[in-house]
Length: 76
View 1: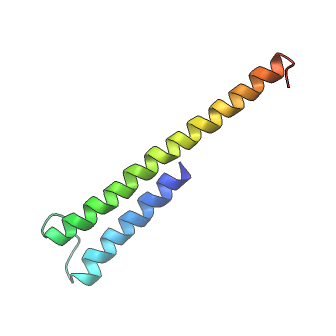
View 2: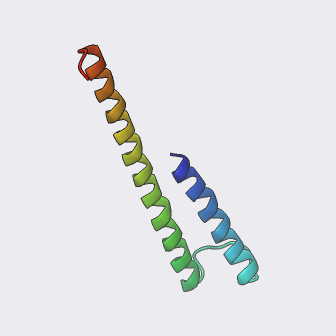
């Protein structure tokens, strides 16, 4: 989840700075094809990092649950 939140912050700041400083205009992400490309690329990384974070969490949760199950049954 930390990966997702870091990605959200980085993508948001990148989009804001791209529009504000490189285009010399106020942030409006829907007025230019280049802005759409940057926005879509940022969304891709944002969503993919969210999915990866959830799979890592699910794997760690499964691993801990399996260890506890073995420990309760006195198995190695």
